[in-house]
Length: 417
Image 1 (cartoon, rainbow, N blue to C red):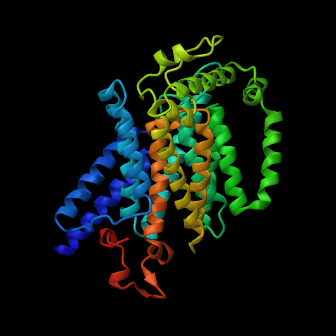
Image 2 (cartoon, rainbow, N blue to C red):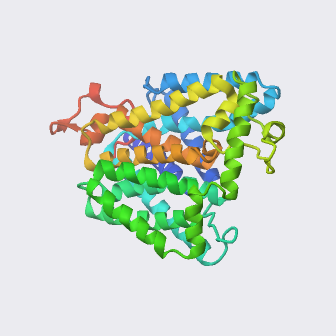
Image 3 (cartoon, rainbow, N blue to C red):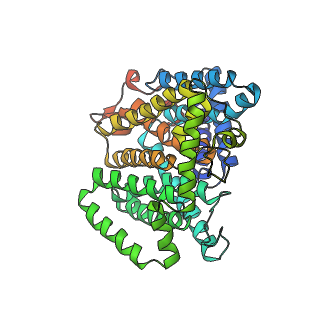
């Protein structure tokens, strides 16, 4: 009976983990429901002594410092309670620990990656269909995919395309996995293009360079040539969208430069704790350059937005948090990992770099759908760091079962996998 209970527990946890991954490509409600269920089940099992409690990790100090600083900044804001309520998305940071401690074996990790491949392909097909049916946004027909706006969809696809592209080009990947990843990456990149989100395009280019440089250096030049060829084959309206990226006179580029100047003016007057994280339209109206016409409720830059709303108290821990995420992934890259896990780590680094590039032009850290995937890739890398033996040999060391002392504290969650 005990074995059956353990088996049912492991299946329930895996189903919830898989549900989270599956919903992450198209439903924030589904993702958060799965996350809440995972946390509740984890707490219940731990309280019944059927699951070990989390141990200390290298991310604890940066995360706690970040949370404390942002709460302190919110408490110092004029609209204190509104600013505290605005921090609700920080609860999503629990994703890092959920995946870090519950994904303990290579088999579970790979099954979740397979779920992500299927979900990415499905979301991409849906997004492409919206574009082809003329149901997109604006004159270009920008596809919002499975989300409310094309910008959110572009930010999500940046993460998904990075991960599946890395699996597609990684070395020594199983043929079936490679083919599935190539199909998902191809559809995902097309869907990302049809979002016409320029900041996500730039993020994906940066991510692609990182991925190819780490896994397939010889593909860099051919891919660059291919991009140039595709550019010249595009219809005029699409090509203009691309060239507008570096056009200083383009309307939204002018507005972003105005935001930089206005945001800097706000920061100079409120350098310590900022002006709070509620709608910035009223404040920006007072500080915007004289020639600026459009008024924004947030800064289209993650670092500027944090500086304006949280001041140096929030900006410094925010930068340290991002650096701790990158440090974790780079440390994993130096480990002796099987090819699929190494490809996943490279894809994670590419996605992270792409996220930061995207964030230079968008407030993507405030987008729950996008930041959910950020925490997911960080959590998956934390799992690799915490359970290195399990990921390297799926529970075996030198051909024998790992001794109890070397087993992950959560390893009994997945005895049948």
